[in-house]
Image (cartoon, rainbow, N blue to C red; front, side, top):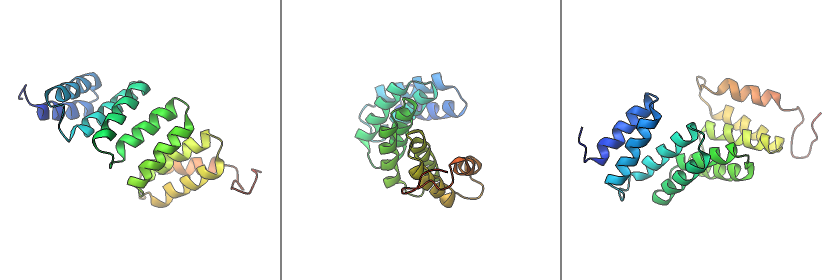
Length: 169
């Protein structure tokens, strides 16, 4: 381990996160940023920090880190997903939907984004949009997708006849 290497701290942070050592991972990611604040790969460190903050319930901190990641690289979906998740957790479903939608422009075949945006639509009372997203999630998901059953259950829980020009039965 090289104590003056940002890459070493970043890699160790990743390993610690996989082991569930979130505080240690967070500290290593912070040290990596201190050692090399202008590295073009720091978007991933900021995105990882945002994920850790979400796991810890720090939605405001997650928003800050996700925005930092986007400032460095706006062409990956992860930071937008983290932003959407934070706003979803805060009950700001419109912002969550906007960020999930942006993530889908970058990663349109990701069933998990459709599922999460569907939940945000559902929580916002937009059942017709939720239905479409749940259907898209199931259409795109591989047969062994871990969230397949969850998406199917959510789809089945929506009132039949939910749609843009229909009222729920």
